[in-house]
Amino acid sequence: MAEINIRGISKVYDGDVLAVDQVDLEIADQELLVLVGPSGCGKSTLLRMVAGLEEATEGSIEIGGRDVTHLPPKARDIAMVFQNYALYPHMSVRRNIGYPLRLAKVAKPELERRVGEVAALLQLDEVLDRRPSQLSGGQRQRVAMGRALIREPQAFLMDEPLSNLDAKLRVEMRAEIARLQRDLGVTTLYVTHDQVEAMTMGTRVAVLDKGRLQQIDTPQRIYDAPVNLFVATFIGSPAMNLFPARVARDDAGGFVLDLGTQRLPVDPAVLAAEPVFADNLAQRVDRRVVVGIRPEALDDAGLEPAVPGDRVIEATVDLVESLGAELVVHVALVGASSAESAAASVSDSAAASATGSASASATGSVSMSDLASATDSAAASAIGSASASVSDSASVSVSGPASAARAPSISADGVARRAVARLSTRSRLGPGDAVKLAVNPAGLHIFDPDSGIALRFAASTPEN
Ligand code: ADP
Image (cartoon, rainbow, N blue to C red; front, side, top):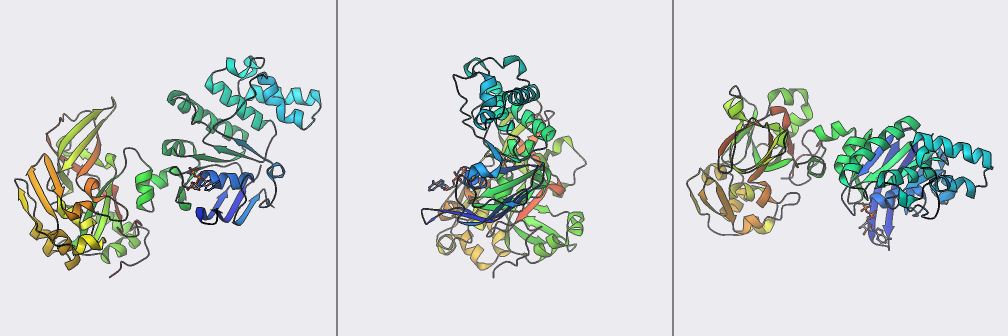
């Protein structure tokens, strides 16, 4: 039983690869903390530094109040479970599990007692005399866990332990590991690239990107209140929809988000509850932001006649995927054109200064002048450089410099016009149908397009 304290830890490989950058992490006694992030973000490096398999360039690591930063792995009293759990093929399950104790020259009666205990815990008592090749994938995984457990370590370190298993077994095993970890109460640091695994297993989840800790919180808080665009889009499947937009005032002194030809109000109740959010929004009137809406925050307004008209966005259905319990509906927003792509690329000076002609021939309702007049000159010139061709409401194509936006966090040509909604199977929608999507007012996320930080958290003011 021990807490793990990681302070200011960094790792630089070969003098210039910054794999882990100043990470602080506290894992409470008996906690299962899941470290999640895309491939190459530094997860394994961080775990290996805790294990002592990799020397930290900077920072310190304590396990159970003891500074282990410079201790060899053996002296750290931890057990690791890897994805390649390499059991000894010629040994029985009994001998595989007991191996660490035999190495430590533990007396036979004590060894047998502990193997028996661990095998009972892992429900391996029936297969103790089998070889690994005679076991299922899940049983092999449990033997590997047993071999780690039998040493009664202070902490478990698990590096993608389920990635070799098939999908069904993975679901079973992740529940089993989480249950075992709770029963045993062993402090555990668990590394995965799979956000579903992270969400379902962790007491808390730490999200890592490019070696830096982005957010650490309960799975639900991370889902409900991602601190930045990276976390917002990494956690959740299908991913959060992102739309470039502009902040404007409405007649009643509230805020609306201008998505081009469509507008969405920001719920005053949300702003009243979050003064930082309201302040940050007030500082960004007439400026661009990125709006995030999770697929389940969109409903088929046709099924909910009571939804106020201003909470609705109009779209055309591209594709309907039926998952049995729900529909995943891919749509193209009506009227979402190059204006939005351009708005997203304002920070890209090449796009902003490029000259060109705006040509919009639309049967839909692309209104360049509306947006241009409401924007600052940089945005207006970017919009001017875009050329949109809107042939019909079902297919919107954007070309020109603005569509090749090199905006920092989002690719404008992809996120601006498309969205995914998770709808009830009561929706009777098919490709080409017009749909009105009701936006749940509590489900609007707004981000600074340059820093990516969520406005409910951002303390900074926008650049002029
Ligand atoms: P993850 O586990 O999240 O996939 P890693 O911790 O394995 O990421 O790697 C983080 C970064 O460090 C990557 O850019 C990777 O290429 C680099 N890296 C990892 N190990 C080494 C090494 N031994 N030498 C040089 N660079 C490495």
